[in-house]
Length: 79
Length: 226
Image 1 (cartoon, chains in turn purple, cyan):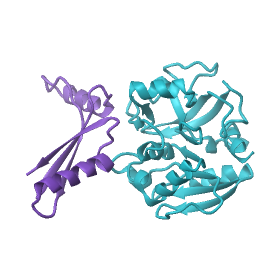
Image 2 (spheres, one colour):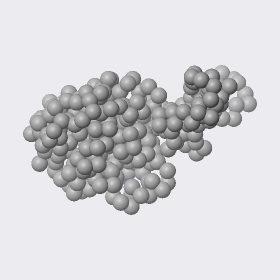
Image 3 (cartoon, rainbow over the protein chains, first blue to last red):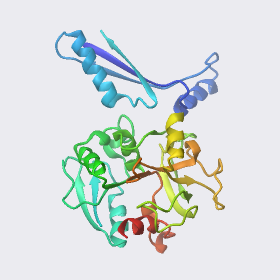
Image 4 (cartoon, each protein chain N blue to C red):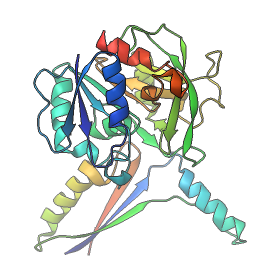
């Protein structure tokens, strides 16, 4: 099974990189961008076809390593 | 004082901190990240600066889960002393030994300069050679040193006297200019609840010789070795 994990900064946590990207977009004349927040995407291959077990495995992966839950949220998508 | 320095792939300040500890009179051994125990008789575990695992994922994230960190956690739980400097502080936060997280510097720049710190208390195992509110001259070198934690955690750290050092100016004032990385409450270093674990972003081990600009860093190692 293919899964995707999306890690994003929690609301209210300052994102200097997102701010820099937003400024860069604005600097070359692109209009209409009102804000950018940078995150991470992990594409994960899961053995077998047990979706519930995969969900548990991926949740553990996020909690233990992939996200720092002090400042980050995560979302799991299983294809 | 027997100190064990944990070396991760990408650690690069282990020799500096070993030198500072040896100068203060400590006996120093090195521990590899894959080791599962601290050497017998270890009083102090040290996590040195550097770029462990290339700062992959997040600074300190992978090192924080290395085998040697289980041994460091066990050492801390027994009341053993733990010191994390720079990347070592990031590792302590990622490993759960200290609360909060070190975020990207507020201005996005890697900062590398001399830095004044205010010593918040001089009654811990790390700071007896200093005076409370003493301003010391050391340095910083990091891209992710912006200390962040939720409001409850910050209130708890402040209420329990667990802030070890703050970025300050020459008079000891906590100015915005002195706090270049944007840390909450100008926090440069914090203690664990039992005051046996210290993490700090600045490098006291850089300033232990007049030849390289100063000796204000000696106090930390002298306190530990006393």
